[in-house]
Amino acid sequence: MKKLLILLLLSSVFAGGCSKETGVKAESDNSEQSPQQEITYVKTMPAGLMDFTGKLSLPGVLKPREEVMVSAKASGAVGSLYGEVGSNVKKDQLLCKIDDTLFQLQFNKAATALNMEKIKVENAEKAYQRMKALYESQAISQTEYEGAETQYRMAKELFDLAQNDYNLAKENLAYTNIYAPISGTISMRDVAIGENIGPGKTLFTIVDVSSLYVEAGISEKDIGLVKVGQQVMMKMDALGGRELQGKITSIGPVPMEPAKTYPIKILVDNRNQQLKAGMFTTIEIVTESRKEVLGVPKEIIIVENGKQYLFVKQGDQAVKKEVTTGMAMDGYVEVTGGLQSGEEIVVVGHEKLVDGALVEVKQ
Image 1 (cartoon, rainbow, N blue to C red):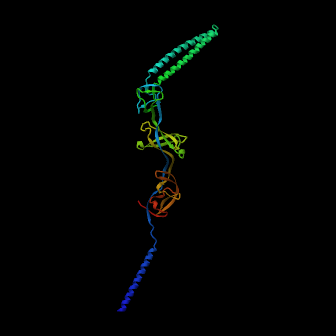
Image 2 (cartoon, rainbow, N blue to C red):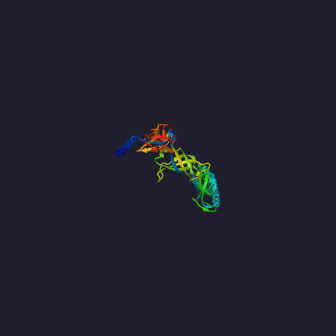
């Protein structure tokens, strides 16, 4: 009985030892199996052709095509006014009339004096011609002839003086009527009826807004991209982002201070009067255009050590390809090398990839 108990205990120990060794071997077998490669889910699209347009964006402000200040040229009290701020006027339209009572008297006096001197010079000329004929026939002396000649010369000088006085009086009388020098809109009026004004006093400002200029500045590095006659587009915030077309009419040869930008002027049609001077706009100038070239989303380009890469799906793998790029526009970039049209490019999930990674397209 005692021997049987010892045998049972030994059998139990041996059995336990065998079980532990088997477990170690199983664990060793599992550790020798290669781990399964992780799959990255991505979204792809075929690389396609698109049009690229290079644009130069500049801020600008609308200004009148022409702006003229109207000033008085005569002194006196203002008798009548014919224009308000905002009024549209035509060229040579009467704007203001100065009391012309004194100027009319001066003109009448000058006209009478001129008429009298005209009669005198005509009579002196007749006398001179008569004396000249008598002198040539030796009927009168040289002294008598020269006296008639002197009288005629003096009469002409007095007539010329009277003519100058008349012209001045006529001009001063005309200055009492102040006319619009251009067609346009009155933007400023600084005069009232009854006010005494003098020469040089600015009475009105008239602007021609049938067409407007946009003034903008362009940097030295971009000045070579624009030329006179070039068409541009303008976005008007005041008109809800409406786009208008214009044309570059001039490019300044000297940069403006302190920005060191070259001034350009762009003519804009405004016959419908929707645009107002002083409005701000964003100018877009097309500097380059490329048709049907390879383009991809700019965000999928990876930059490493000065080189550019993207991932394409080939089979079940992501392949990292070096590419070269060109123009950029609206979130896309032109690919000039390293990629073919139709290749399946990774557009979502690319930031997690390495070259050769297993990928699966997730819709």
